[in-house]
Length: 338
Image (tube, rainbow, N blue to C red; front, side):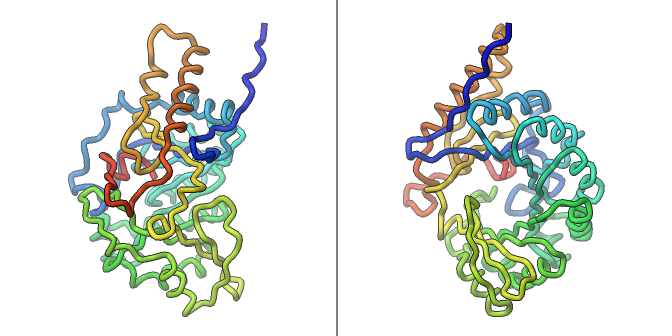
């Protein structure tokens, strides 16, 4: 006899923030070796058996959506496109009533954009921190800028709209390219989002002096191309459109204008650890729950839901980057998932 479905209830933390956005890292591996992210030889990758299978990812995702009413899922890495058969995971997640998106370095999009769209992907963000080929190669240790540009163009050709390009702006590294990126977005028909540099670099080079404030970014662009602010909605990005109608930009002031008070996201790492915040110093092991022997499917689902609720209930008020007692996460960005 069929049982009644478990009613959906909001996933609320102790500060009355309702969570609706799940970030899922599908791999900790990457085909780039960005200097602020990992050493040239890479990191100690998770063994294959430690990484969640597609079936496990889909099952955990279903708990978030069906029990807690999550509305969006973003796939991340490492670099998610290096995970074999990624369109198969996208296809399985389209059974859930969510907006499905992907963050990528774009280097493999020229061949994967169309299959991902065919599988049901809704939106895409491409990370790109320099438009200068020599600087890009120094930063990523890969001469792959042409491939990334081709990937961005392939994403647009495949019908993804908007295509967003994420630029982490760092003082002394690429802050002289702010206007170049704005003009790239206007020319290519993509939305460029400028992100303040956060302390998740692998070699701990971050300092407040390396942060270019989001308002400075807006002022720099507006001096060349007048802007007007538009309603941001639930997005962490402040949005501005060009007065002449040629698109828009976004700025994410994670450091100088933190949006922690309205944060609605949680993160699942490639090895199945749930994090309530990008800067969390603790994790909840969902992999251990989903792989627990001798448990029925309903018992596992119950335990997953309970662990998720407890993790979110313990979420702190904010990342605390500016606090004197701020503690960096033990993992780098590539190991957590963006």
